[in-house]
Length: 445
Image (cartoon, rainbow, N blue to C red; front, side, top):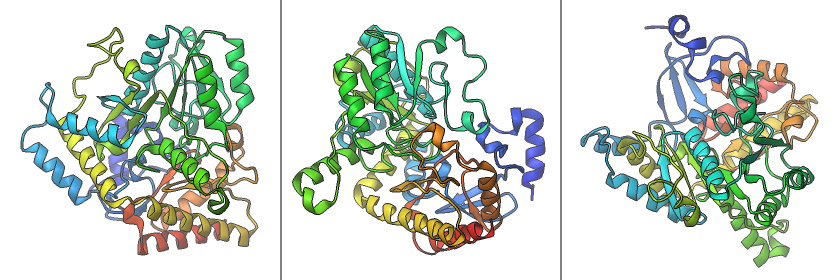
């Protein structure tokens, strides 16, 4: 049996850093990455045959767990007809119908091959629609690795200490305005300082790439109000949160909360809330069922500027690939049938309470933001609300926590600045065991 160590040694001779995505290299936590030969349910099976309880879930797509039989069967059925056609195929139409039905803000949608393609294309479309050049993004939010957006970015860029990449021309960077997340005054000031110049605002409505950070009450509604006032487009990057926290993503959560608070404000305990409808939404991960995928969609009048109808060009040889579409359709139909979101939130709360209880007993300051099947663990006293407060977390302490968990068979993201994910497959003994391991790792710090 080939070991992870020997595979990594071979990979380093041929692949930069030995990995095809930087955060996989374990540079942030130390040590060498393990290689996986198969995955099933909530488990990864390494090259050495170790079984790990996985809270990375392929960085989000595996909401049904790994290698789900329905998704596998859908891929096999599509494979019988070929791998790629270079023409329209029926799966694309069915996927578009599902997305438009699930996400009310999306009237038309275009498929692509990755989240990076989706956000890059949405930015180009916003510029084409408004005739303006400048874009606002938020520090720590990661929207893929296109030049306009890899500035003060999260995810692997932050993990490796390079939130601003080399190779981005200064002229590109000047068109991107970076603001702190959860800061309404900074947004207002940016629009005041750049009148008639801002094409759009792109935001992870719930941040997942600087750890998991939730918006403060009214913040997303303020983004909607200000962009509308200034004729800029509001772009929700729901590549990570789309279909994971709600069938309609964060915008669906907001709509449900607003409706519940309006109907029964005295009994729900919810704060007054507002439905927020973005102009464009970027999607990925879950809609591919584990295969490479991306999509962006929104208002029909904006989307109709895309070629071949309009002057904004976007294309992709493998866009709408039948295997990815078949897998994604199966994943979305499972969500529709099972509606697992309350169950996933209960699993998330169980994990959160286990970590917090152990930390309280230890006298160790820990923040565990959690919503639904997403969570993070920050070793800090500071409530985490933005990029700056996320960096107050003790990365060295996280490193020790990470390796203790891994030694005991629980795999978390190998970075203090990434969200964790749960799946429906984590219910029962696997989650109980993971909670026990994490609590023990906290006590051992």
